[in-house]
Length: 376
Image (cartoon, rainbow, N blue to C red; front, side, top):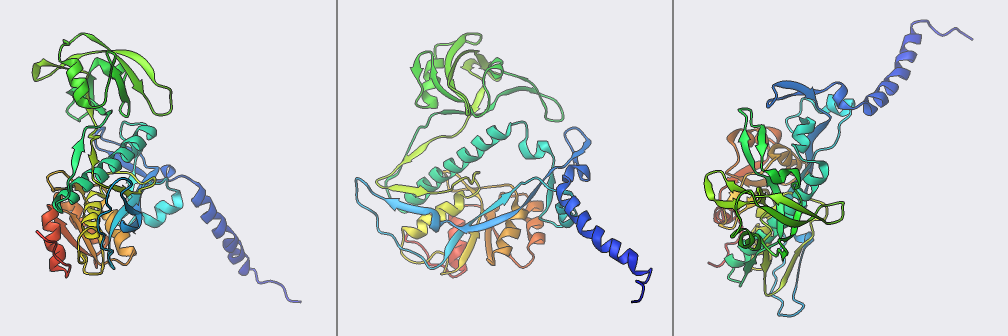
């Protein structure tokens, strides 16, 4: 039996080491090797997360319409579909950073990029509430556009953010209202001065006879804990000294009342960016013809009550997700920054990306692409 050539030994060693190095790189967090500039602080920080593409999913599969106590509207199923688009922001390993670092659709994120100044739990509340509001506004805009009776009703009092009274040049908040010591973003105010709060208007009425410096007794619901009682000091609006406030900006929690029930099952998906996709799907479902021209159309953009389309985050990742799903047309907000749209086109060069400013403009684009117009 011949001896193994000496030159083959290094090859064997390398062949054994490479898999071990790959496994090790997959276990090491990206923050060990990846960093990103925090422009607010002007310093490099570890980047343990990345914003990456997720999926493009048909809205119609998540839509159901029922009428437990009324007449079910006529529905017009479509061969094509509108797809809402999602991204994800997972933790990264050194290996995933190495593989994705040069991709346009791969964006490193610091802890501040990922969570801002909110806790992960607060961010979750905000994301789900934004998606709920997007669905409500979409229903109102779509159904009033089709001539159905729809009414917006006030919702409960949910804190979006605390009022900042003074900011530094870099945007950092230097002082907030005294109520910030008690209340947090994501809190829900249930009672104020013994009055059950059904809407922000109820709180405004309670505050009408109060003055800055007064203490207001409140009952607060906070995610993950039991409701609690507290007292908060009131302040005046900085540029309206005669107006007394608690010191927070509320979510838009209004809900829609319809002659039938519309349910859009978004599961654990959050954020407002599916608003336009919801709106177009409802219009398509409740009107004759095919808005999509029997094809697949991806859509992103917040929808506002006046029908305007608002900008969203993660556009380049969404463009990549649409491209990977094999969809050829992507409607995006015209309100998006120009560099966002250019980055999206770079991430998916073969994708037809069409900015739209309003619902009516989106409907016109769809007709130009071969879709059926809706009745005026």
